[in-house]
Length: 156
Ligand code: CU
Image 1 (cartoon, rainbow, N blue to C red):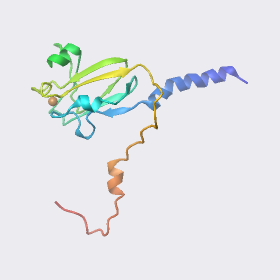
Image 2: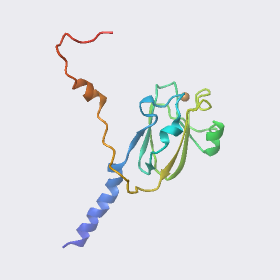
Image 3: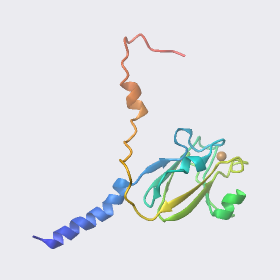
Image 4: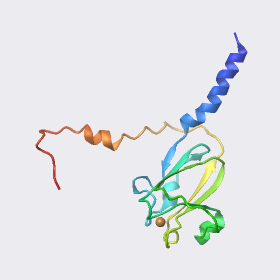
């Protein structure tokens, strides 16, 4: 029995387990980060935990992502000097617990509803029910579809 080895293993688990269990949330799922979408409905029922990531997907240049506070969220205004994320595939690591507010800073998009408020939980709590199964990649699904003949390809 080597208790020290046990604690080394525990320490390794403590370091790596959160990254293994971290969830990437595609904001808006298939719709991405856009106008005309209710992000509060999207966030409902989701449990955001420290270590998870938010991924904002949008056509580069059409939208952006600004992290603001509660006031900025309500007024759709970011403090002067707030640097927007503009890559179109912006990954935000939820490093601390608490409320997080994000808005689009382009034109009147935020006023039109392009804003997201979430609450991040401090640690991983037991999840009731089964873990969600990983969704199959759409690429592998389409490539796995049987094609009756090589000449049967659709052309639009
Ligand atoms: Cu926008």
